[in-house]
Length: 328
Image (cartoon, rainbow, N blue to C red; front, side, top):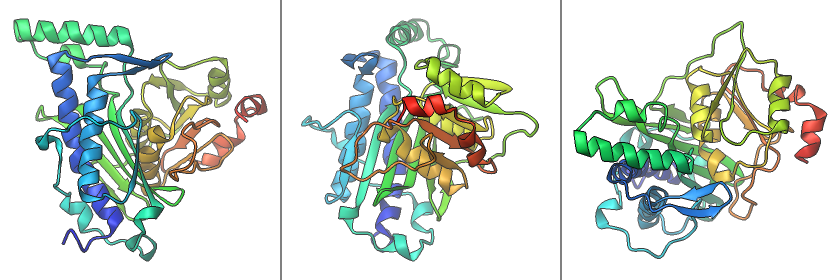
């Protein structure tokens, strides 16, 4: 069954399993406290969790799909990968989906996978707090919820699948999402024009406008764009993946980010999931980003995302010209 399924289906199906494994690796690294933080650039940190999660995902994909292009946020690595990190299971629900003809026979050369192993990374001071908290957990055997609530809920693992220049398939895994049964981890996925799973889309409340935006990368231009929407409420959180989840769950109407700080690996997966349920994600000029392997990484013209049922064009029309000019 697996080999007869379209290539896109198999890649997304494997990515669901790989992100779950990556989520467990992230939790293990956090629990052990050996973050081994490396500063890649100004306000750009990389931890052992980033590196390990990415090696898990990319090695798993390479083992079954050696001819596809994979671009990971953390770059390439020559480190050996433990055998138990290489995932081979494919999600059966995705394999059983019916695919339209234009997605049924894809040349691997026309496909690119974008991986962000740890989207919504916390600030250095928060990582130090994590180390302290988990040390206390081990010392006193306290429950984790009082430490992790509000600190890691915005962290996601993202795998986006692009065909040509379009984001088609996306997987968003939340390592610290806690179900009613107490289990950690949730995986949401979507394939544009095919289906979605792991969540039930919810329309946001009527009669008000809720905007989600950056928590730690705001500036005057970002705020001007948000103010132009006349929001009733602003939700400031980290991570493009988590912001889009707020749209999927009806907790926000739009995600507005008037800055060039976002990258293709941040938006490819969320964009595909949004379009799978009738939402939209574009730059602030209304153009969709290209996800071919040779495109630039930075989303230089900002990000505007809207949930299903929202009038995307209304938000575009309210972006001030002064904001657009700064992002041109």
